[in-house]
Image (cartoon, rainbow, N blue to C red):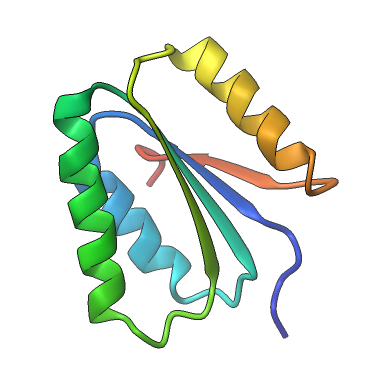
Length: 102
């Protein structure tokens, strides 16, 4: 049975950490994962490539992934507020993870 509770994965300048988190989440039967990256243009492309390369290697990953890249660094406070407001418009609850949570 798939979980109806979405995961929100907040990230910054740690593309390897995002990759590791997504690998771990692949083992769960989730309906929705929101990946929200706060950072500059330089890291956005690196993270974008990493995430989609991972999906190409895992075509059986059935979770709906919603990816948001912030070109301007909003900072932790504003990024969390804006990100969670976006998710809670669609869902009543969520599990929130940061990219550096092991």
